[in-house]
Each structure stands twice: as structure tokens, then as C-alpha cells.
Amino acid sequence: MIKEATWPRPFQTRDGKTYWVRPITAEDLDRDRRFIKGLSETSRYNRMMGLMPEPPQSMLEDFVHVDYEHSMALVAYAGHPPNETFIAVARYGGSEEDCEFAIAVADEWQSHGVGTTLAHLLFEYAKAHGVRRLHATFFTRNNQMLGLAHELRMSVHRSESDSALLEASQTL
Picture 1 (cartoon, rainbow, N blue to C red):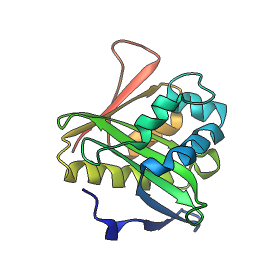
Picture 2 (cartoon, rainbow, N blue to C red):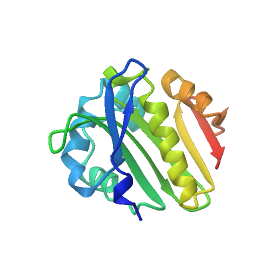
Picture 3 (cartoon, rainbow, N blue to C red):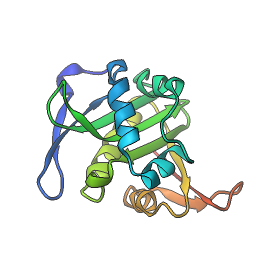
């Protein structure tokens, strides 16, 4: 389970802006919805793997109800609770052996180190909770995710089932 004393944690972007990171909770459903809706069309398309102006309620429920072991989501936010704004969300889910990993960063916060920091924290958390491997599937033209995968030293290859997709993986 989560040790409350360790969250939230403060961080700074490469250009000195402060933000915080903490685990997602069920009470974050509306904040997560606003975050996803606030992404540019391209960022939302890349994160949701297709056109989706707003995720369905059932998907949002799944996003915020994690078990903090085999599924987890960390949120980066700016501002102060209860009026904080999500600026990034990284999550994993699956089995102990292999979990899928996904991340989205608000457009105005991209390329400032938020995604890298959040991914490192999520990978550390996954490893500490027994996850042995994380993998991600993303569009070949998603240069932000490709750059992050390389920065995280993930193994990247073209999907065997769809030439428009790349798959990245890392053993923890």
C-alpha cells in the first residue's frame, strides 16, 4: 500500500517551475476528465490511440480506481489542492509479470522533464511492487513517446501486428 508520508513529492521542471506528484485517487475522476479533454487533439489521439473527444465514464472509472500494486497511476499537478490542475498522468496495469505503461503530458508542459520524472517514479514504484516488465504501444509518428522510450532506455521495435505502431519494453 502507499505510504502517505511520501506523497505528494515536489519537483521542478528544467526551467524551474514547481509541480507535485502523487498517486491518483477515486476522487480525481473529474480532474482526470478535465486533463484528458484539455489535451490537444494530437496529444489526446496519441494517448487514447484514436479519436476520442472525451473518454467514456467507464474508462475514467477504471483510470482512477487502481489497486496500487498491479495497477497504478501517478499524477503530476500544478497548483494547490483542492484546486490543483493535472499536468501529466503515468499509469501501468496488468499482471505481476508484465504491465502496460502509458503516459500523457499536457501540451504546455511537454519537453520540460515532467514526463521523464513521472516515468522514472512510476517505474521505481512498479519494481518495488513486484512488476517485472513494463511495455508500451504507441504510434510510429509519436516522437515525444519515442524520445521518452529512448531516454528510459527501453527496447523499441516495430509492432509485428501493425506497422503504424511501435512497441517499447523494459525489464525492471
